[in-house]
Image (tube, rainbow, N blue to C red; front, side):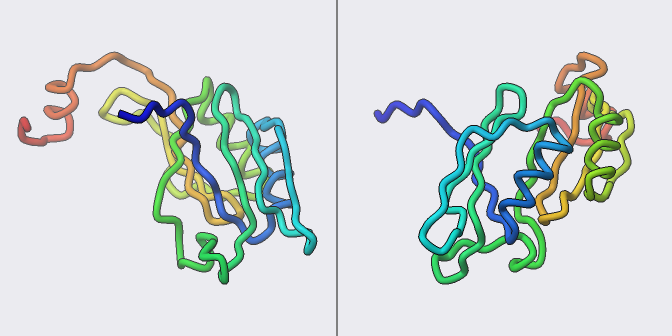
Length: 146
């Protein structure tokens, strides 16, 4: 069985230089590395947010690298646990993001909401506020046990 040591998302964006600046301003990201090719396309960049590492590359349709804007939206959500989701959402919107789902206390025991960054990627900003069992969460959601 293979041993996997690292797994991190790669965000595809139309404007990688501006996106890296956004993540630095909005999330306090630290740029780890950035590599461009002979056409100054960002073929790989990596940044950290807390202990998480995220990579980034420029949208190049002929390589099959399509940004959320080219796809008509993002097919996935980035879930980011933060100490203060309200403050993080405010920082992100100040830097150009848009709140899609307001930060609020959720029935599953978290304070969270959803933000779209200027490059089309979706972020759930989340903080645990209470410890709940699976049964308690299902009950609050009105779901059947499963």
